[in-house]
Image (cartoon, rainbow, N blue to C red; front, top):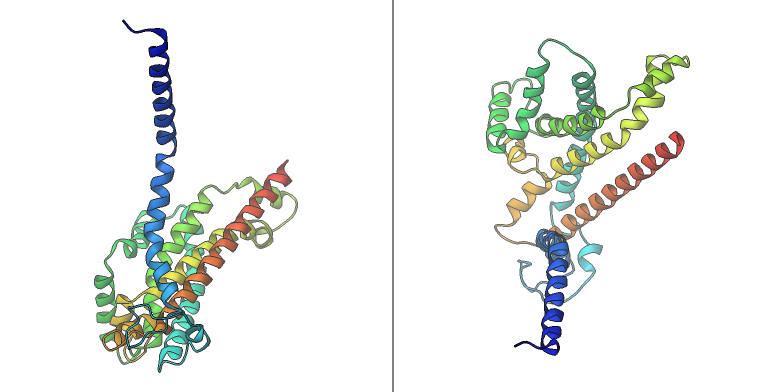
Length: 289
């Protein structure tokens, strides 16, 4: 027969087990998410860490000792500065063009009804679903059939990058426009603003965060692309092509330096965009209140 003294510890143990199970159930998803993020960030941390390494040989695979010389002399490897400059120029120009065209396409798809609207949406989304090797080889075939007009090089890479980044711009801006309050534009026009003034003062500031997010995404995709760029580059060498070429004979730590710098700048710009959207949303809520 169980006494009260014996039953009390048993109830206490059940209470502890119940509280422990509730704690685990409440925080299991958080722990899983943190582990997943850590798993994704681990290679990036290794890349950044080895940008400060002073390897003993040509390959930056084994940690030797810490140094800042790689960052101070990031362009000491022959060809790396030109490759980085080419990648930045192509990414900047392609991002500007793709953002402008993608925003106009998104406005047309959301705001207007026209014949072929569904087909246009399908065509816009096709580059996102098409394998890069297929798109790259298709563009190469197009350019090779018209070599009298356009030679493989800077501008063929530019056209190819606009081709696949514009889809991501349309998706990003379209998501913002779907939740856009059209009454703000109507109020501006009721107060005497014409179509251009309404777009300039009301529409553009409200969709600007989405445009910036789309531009950052397009820039990252452009500067990172290898397959499509390699097939349509001709004699031009971007940073991914440079890394692929030099990796067969050496992997200098300057490659890690450039990759780390690109990643850190992208993170800083992304955080700035999030902060801007937060401030804009806070100001909008404050104004409506």
